[in-house]
Image (cartoon, rainbow, N blue to C red; front, side):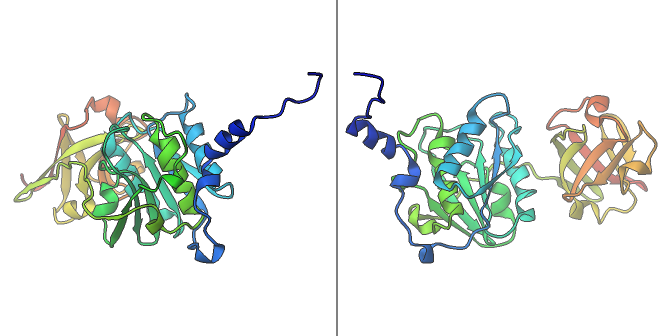
Length: 296
């Protein structure tokens, strides 16, 4: 056989080409493509220690090598749909119009839950129909949705356990290249929403819950700033402590507790230069009460 390079059999060449989504997706003329920012953002629960995030990025770039992939976070707690929805709601508005936002937190991967492409306020969203888009759906503005059923946009073969790589990633890549949402599948309107526990108001007393702690140990609640505003001289009670509501962290001395409305308009409990989560020992779901200092 000598030292030459062994030719690749024709069947193998066809198989290799068939597995590349950029080659099997419909050819769409440039004048038929829609304007995009060329950016794809990522929110996943993949973590950073395995190959999952890298494989996802590869599938996006295979579909559109010219797009810019931005990691919002891969540190969503495993299978935490509500946390993913919260992060998406508080991050996507700061990107340019025409950006594609991909969310892969998918406990139901391989089941009948639908893959979606959404459009809202000139932003585009790709991910499973399991509640990760709850924050987007509840924000002002019209939402248009499509089920992703056109297999020409999939990476083949499609794994039953990694739709992020084989379905959502390629769809996001093609969408970022200007492929119109209508080409991905039929319109849908009945979207799944994550269960939300809303604060309760009784007179001048507002009761909410801890959602989770951020990386600094600040305890985020489900209480929006608009709910706190009508309460005169508010204080917050949680974990056996009563803490004042202040404007910023340095309004108290190091080690002291405070509450404030954070940069995303949500009430949080903090501890100056320390972790409120560790200090108070509060877990997700713990009650938080806001009252007026003049009474309960």
